[in-house]
Image (cartoon, helix red, strand yellow):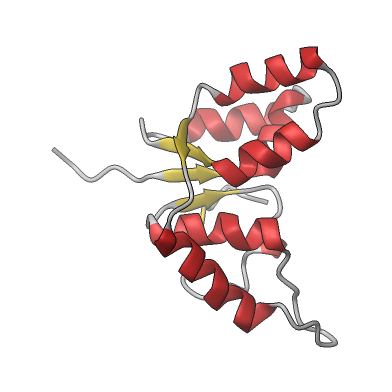
Length: 135
């Protein structure tokens, strides 16, 4: 049995999928693995943008197609380390926001490729593996 990559899908891709974006569908269809996940932070971000019961139900139905990863002590520790390194805004330096910090921590701890349409939000994080088709 060969090694299969594990993927963590970022909120940006899920939102694009909800908006019927063909790039999102193509990107997700290209993932050659049964191990495609979202994390609880992504679920929370999606739910925060659902202002009707119908949207929430649609979102939860779509998210159910992915495996769900939940926060752990290791992820929290990784997030703290990332924030210590990247939370101070310096001219010309990228700034890490809390949801992205947590999502990156999931990818790092679980050794997953991060699938995102916001590559710039993550590419400066040492050790992060971004899916090559990410924008």
